[in-house]
Image 1: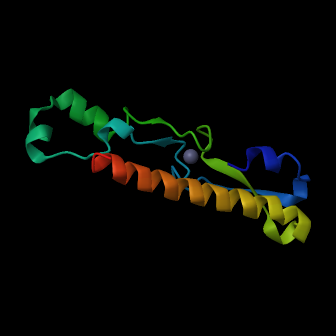
Image 2: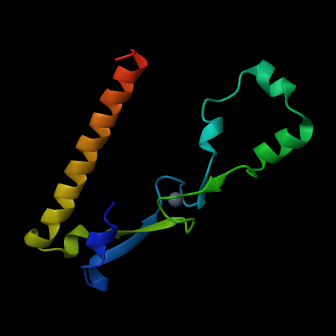
Length: 112
Ligand SMILES: [Zn+2]
């Protein structure tokens, strides 16, 4: 979410960290399997599928780090107050957007 902002910073003002979305794997579990499995559903799948699934063959590339397993983040200790501000604002916006999406999803579930 900081990608555009980060390009405005000098090299010593940014650092690479392990991507929190995929924990550095560069891929994440396929969201269509996110609901998890009931034991009867699992029993219905064939062994090839189960093996592949457990080996991560159905994982999808991580969007947050573009499969690299690491993300560039601002090194806040290297930023001036003025430079930090847009990051703080972007973070606040993202939080508000997430909150909004959470509320509207809940409303959709209630049939609003
Ligand atoms: Zn990632």
